[in-house]
Length: 482
Image (cartoon, rainbow, N blue to C red; front, side):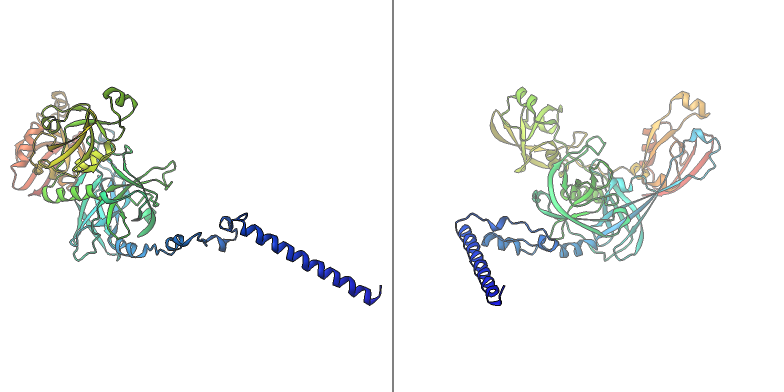
């Protein structure tokens, strides 16, 4: 083939190639202009491209450019969240140790807490410090302090402890009633002893009852969040993006015991009330409406002829209780307290739990389809409208029981009261163990629990206890009481 002929073939190939390219370009332009291709649905596959978002219209640009910044809230809150380490002693089975001379094994635990006052008050979970014989608090700045228990409330799983320090960073209280599902929150604590850990998530639900507080009169109306919470987070802070405390992280739902996307926190509005009671009265002043209520299902709706499944149905009334005296009836549906809607039993318990005996609330009910506002004066568990200051016996931190004549005979004593269980208090602090029989207090013979209470409530200053353990070991303990 001559050079002239080869050039002619190259030229023809070039011309046809150019024509084909122009034709393809023209067809693509036609399809785009006639909406046959939607470029906004193209999903990039590279790692770099996956972090980019392509706006589809002007409003999306404003959303994408919003500066969602967790750093200020995290920095503010971390300084007020502490690491709590506890020590426990396994209580012995006295019947199995006839001589009683042995070393009781020690168990250690770990949790979190939140500083709520500059002079050292710290809120945490009851289960973090319950039964602890030694509590150590480590601050954000690495300083450590021994802590004492001010008070506990097993019904809400909240406890208040105190350290001897001042000028501490404080996490301010927010308002958990204003939290909305979908709102961003941060969980701050010490999971797996990883101090000052911050995780982010949203409020997944409110008013959750998950049946983890195994106590009579328990209040469960948890904030549910998908912020990562793990063992060691208990007692730590759930905060909003303003750096305000909105909940105390308490539990997780998990098939493995570690984070699976479901965490639960006690709402701060309950925490505020519990803490205030413990500081002012030494015990929680629990208010009761005086009703037995149930979430509404098909059976209950049919029984009472209800057209709504929203609220808490009144199933029974306590005689001479607050609700009955106010005019609430069986079959009424409670839908609001003080104008705040309640959609189920946990939310109702939460709203009533924020009050003290003697407080007046307006309970909104549905009766025969009509909405009624009924004023109610709340009462305590004894039917009174007054608060009750903790008795001096509460300082002992124990529960007691009377002994039968047979038990007294077996022990070779004529009278006494058994120590059944021990929590933080005077008896544990001086070394008393469960099973100890208190025979005398300050030379007063103790024949019953009522007599023990009477003697302790009249003591001023020093307390001298004489008693015996089931193995025959005689013991003496002394401490002061205020």
